[in-house]
Length: 236
Image (cartoon, rainbow, N blue to C red; front, side):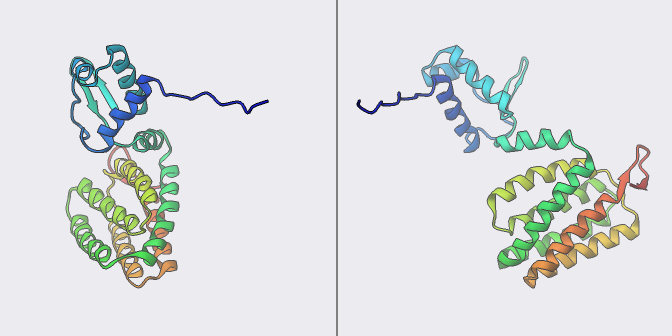
């Protein structure tokens, strides 16, 4: 008996169109926040039926890449499916769970950063450290949280692991949203600043153990302060 030949599996037209439109998003041809061409324009440009276009757009909305706004069109929500999934999951999780995951990622990434950092990485970290210390003395807590986020993103980026960086970037957005309005007690803020400086020093010295320790302690410190509904701090 001759060997059986498996049938060729050809993706449906709508599935192929999903890949085509996803490429427009991930490549930046359709930037995040912009409105994509209307349905009838896509039908003309792509030479496919209206039903096929609707199915493809619906799939991308379900994936979280697009957002359909009634009466206003369809907008690019994010360029990464991972971003959409992780943000939904993080925003539905307990703050303590998010911080624990952050601690795991930052500890490992900080160790890698100490081993792999470049001079450009160090220059960027030192600049962000100065910016973070200046923001810590400002009355606007949201600005302080924003620069702190960029500092930690730079640490993770220095690890040289692109996938780890992408996952952390999404998680850090969720963390910023949760702690952006936090008011730190002065003693805690001083310790927070000192740990950041020690983290940069450890990375500069290629001290993997020291960098991992500092990163873990920073997240632990963040977890000890909680903003109440009235805007005052309390210990967890």
